[in-house]
Length: 452
Image (cartoon, rainbow, N blue to C red; front, top):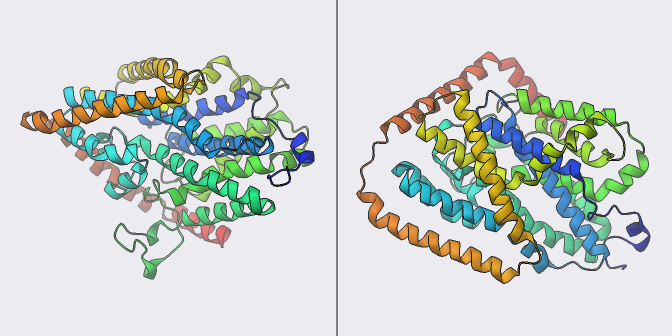
């Protein structure tokens, strides 16, 4: 046992990951609902894009807890780890891609189809965050609604993290286990620092504008997609997992009303934040993520409290259980709705799209996601399912290249609307910068002071 990260004595008091924690699914529900409401209409949750940040923290925490427990039990296996990730992520994602490809081919116009086909390889190989960054660094621009797979940028970051992080974990637990937490904290700080260098990067080689390196908060979403600027959010969850028992030893019997206060702050960021005043990633968004961390650390399911009632409510927990499918399906459904009704901002369409999102997501979770995660389904069957979908996508791609180019579709109304919305978006950013010069200057000064 000495060669592993924890000693026998320490492992006795380690909190097992096998104990189900409904509040984690409660937090997932909050995260995915805020993202959905933001994309349906940003008026509802203007800071809803921060829901992805919450997902990152939760992912970092859970993955680290799993690896710690397996190291204690002497059961760490990279093959087993990656198999679980494939079962968890690939089947539902691949089925989504196939379905959207068919819809693209049958219903949508050439612009949607071309954007979709151009992004396919980056989604399959999990570098879509860099692909979309090279295409258009501004995540919030309305023109991006042409990209029905845009939301896969966050899955790419998580998969990149899942490939690299376990390797570092194994290396440290076998040779430098006492220094692992210090190593993670250093990378966390470097990543947080990196997320404030937006003005120092360019999209052409060598990618760094050495003459103009400066610290600032990126309000144009320039580093929104970039893994080095995002990894600190995943590592925050890792740090919480690695130091959880020690923190709990020093802070016992935390009043659950403090967690309710943290939750209120989190919700305020989700409702009232935006990409200018609460840009992500930045040190400003560290505030709501610390609130998430405090809930993960100190939530007590045995104590009756309002925060317990909220996060363990059966409807909230049920939403959290299907949060992955909800995240997968919400973006293409919302943008297909926008295409069909030409951006009519009617509550009826918003409610209808929300119902469709939940219905399809439940079916995806129940008939695809859940079965393939079960150990009762052999991994060979998972691979056969994935191979079949890849083959069908290949066939559709061949048909698309030979037949779709011969169709002449009227796409002026949608594309013109998108162009107008995109121009309005850019003007709005400039107006805010003019109206809030002192505010923006204050935060730029603050970030330099805090980091340096």
